[in-house]
Image (cartoon, rainbow, N blue to C red; front, top):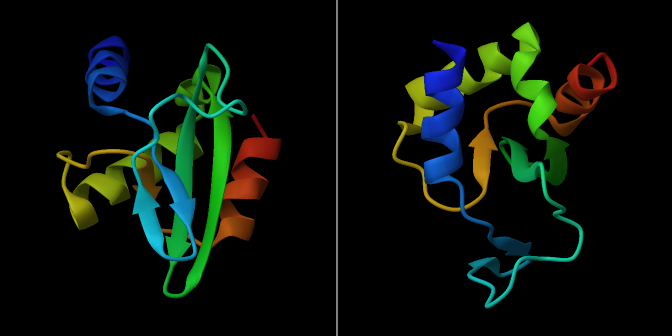
Length: 98
C-alpha cells in the first residue's frame, strides 16, 4: 500500500517555486531539490514555509497522517509542490523525528 502511494505521489509531484507573488513554474528543477527529495509547502492560514524533504520520510507515520489530511483538504490532484495543512513548526518537528 505504501509503495502504491509513493508511486502515485512521485507521478503527481512537480516542482514549483513559491514566491511572495504566488507559485511560478520553473524551467528547471531548483538546485535545492536533489535526487531522492521533493518539495513540500507547510501552510496554515498565512503561515507558509517550503521544505525539501527526503523520500525516506514517506515511511514516517506522522508525515503519512499529514498526507492523508492534505488529501482530505486539497484532494490528491494537487499539482506542483505538495501542500500540507499544518504550521511550518509542526512539519519541522515531524521531519526532525524521522
